[in-house]
Amino acid sequence: MKKNIVANLKDIDLVNIKYNGIESEMTVGDFKSYLAIPSEFSLGYSSYVAKIRSNGTSAPLITVVKNELSDAIVWTRSDVGDYVGTLSGAFPTANKTVLLSGDSGATFVETYRIGANSIGLLAYDISGVAADNLSNAFTLEVRVYD
Image (tube, rainbow, N blue to C red; front, side, top):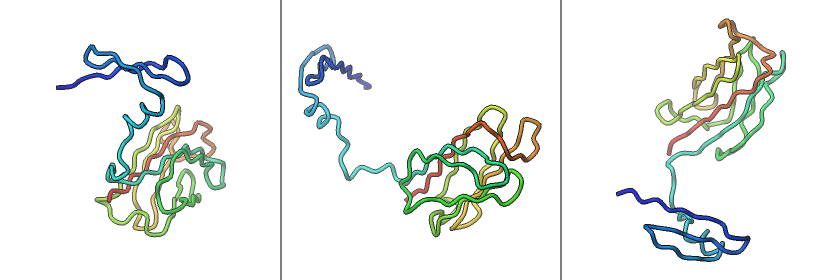
């Protein structure tokens, strides 16, 4: 049975908890410990999340939001609207690598795994033509499962 926990910050030091109709008060530190996820808990994958924007004929502009991979992915432009992200050994097998992308505005994105060291990204304009200079950033998440 699903139960909801409602937590309201009363001030900087105390948290008011209402659970199953019972209210209690605890310090913010105790509340954080109460909600803490054990360090041995794992989602079963490492994640890389970035906002990507094309930059003419140069490598794309990358804003990394989260990187749990072994190092930074190095992005290059290989052709019009075609970008390659490289990180040695980071994408071991196709069944352990998942690429998720969010299109933005007039940008459509196709993602794919090239091999153990690289992933690819194709950007299209609204008419479906591969394109550079797309000013709207789109989001990419790469998940590599254990």
